[in-house]
Image 1: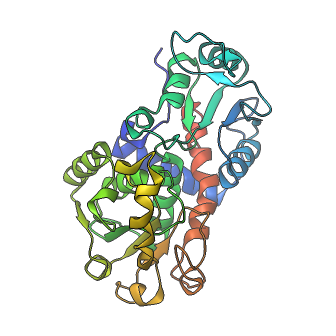
Image 2: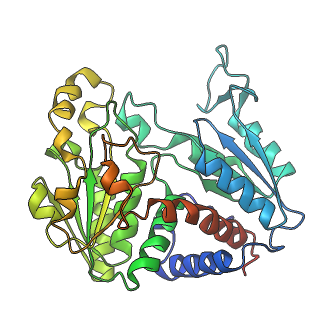
Length: 336
């Protein structure tokens, strides 16, 4: 029997994504159920979390299930992922044992593991979650690695709630300043889901160094072609914002400078004007604004933008709860 994991939405058909969104909308209308009664999920956090942990724990509880939270290296043993390694360092057990043992205990395993920000050629392999998927005998869910598929679904649901049909709506994924380089996961995922929804997507960033990995750009072009949308890159703020229906902001590190922060820093410092403010939003088609959160106010977006009726970031954050219920129920064959 083939195990179905939820690691990237690129593994899902458009019909499957639409079904998950419909199921999430139903969970939003009727939050409690018994789809996970007697079932359990292990949530492994290699990195900090607030919304992800809260929404997964509550989602399992509201559907009758039980969530167990583990932080390897803190309240659980450090894990080794390299095949054939001589484990004479800090790690205490190998993923080959961890994943198989947890699979004997729980019905689902969810993993949050960010890149190391030292070498993108290594980070793009997504080693941690792929190792869990390789050795686990139960479905594995991505809680954010180099993509963030649960955030994708929450974002898409919020957009559909506010805009209805998303086909050919102008969508701008804009880089914003942050005082340190961040994961590209949400940006990768925003590109994937917006193109999958058939939107006309513009990736706005300061220089070509901030264009996303070609893997995700290629997926975006493929998605756009298959779903009747488009994808382009722009470095022109006014042109990108003009007539936009959606502005989605995120900061991410420039891939050519992974592991070389001091070289990226001057480019980043010179690009603080990419902040989302009232003047830029005035160029849009009464556009919506959103962000995955957490967001540094008056760094990534102004107070006025965050507190405006156009901001749907809180709606998107709430939807994490509903879409993750849909994912968990779907993987266990327990739909609405």
